[in-house]
Amino acid sequence: MYLACSYTDLRKGIDGVAAMVQQRFKPDPFTNTLFLLCGRRLDCIREFCRDRDGCILLYKL
Image (cartoon, rainbow, N blue to C red; front, side, top):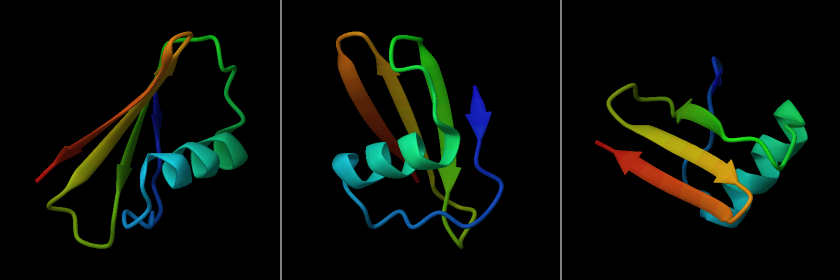
């Protein structure tokens, strides 16, 4: 699991978040990895998970 400790632009869709995660963390695309991202306000979190079958983006308010 990775936790992004700095400001993350949460206006991006799943493609933008996937590109940002790949650029910032350089994960192995075939591992089950969970990324937790938050924006300027700490009242919402995005969870980004990728595995062999694809990606999922969850948004929690």
